[in-house]
Length: 217
Ligand code: HEM
Image (tube, rainbow, N blue to C red; front, top):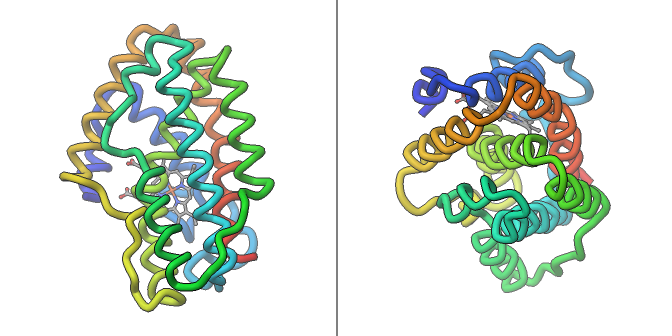
């Protein structure tokens, strides 16, 4: 899997990935270039309540992305429907499981609500930026997101593997299909459009990082 990612698919996705990788810290990924702030993620001490907040806010964001793709204010959004990467249904099952275990599932909180509102507005007028958020949110979850999920499960969930971290079919093939679609869509973009998309990466890191940090609350 790691090799598959690094071998690169050519095209614009390589640029998206390269900008994203530089925004990691060295403790997060080898290609990271950002200074670490706070505790290295491997030493995080998540709580069940915090993790539930993270799952609830993540679900809100994935639901929002699905709605945007189905509404398709821009025709290229329709390309990214039903890729097999969707997470909202799996998250709904996980939240149900937590309820059965006697936990109460909270309402979405500020990080998820703010991010959802932000991408919803953006999607109406700025397809390059929206697609940047689509890419980063989905691909981050299959990379660092999965590593974090494993660690959290080991620390506080008795190694329970949540549906959030399971995909139907071969994940690397699903990712490759989406990479090819992203490359095709970006073939119609000017250099300015592409740069505009890449510049949005930092915002995606900020919003997704805030949602990730909910697990420590
Ligand atoms: C890829 C770790 C947060 C976006 C990766 C990879 C690692 C990693 C190790 C490389 C995977 C590989 O090449 O096999 C982490 C950790 C994080 C974190 C530990 C937090 C503690 C984020 C955030 C974002 C993000 C907040 C932005 C939303 C990405 C993207 C990739 C990536 C787009 C490329 C995935 C691909 O090529 O398929 N991450 N990451 N990551 N990460 Fe993160």
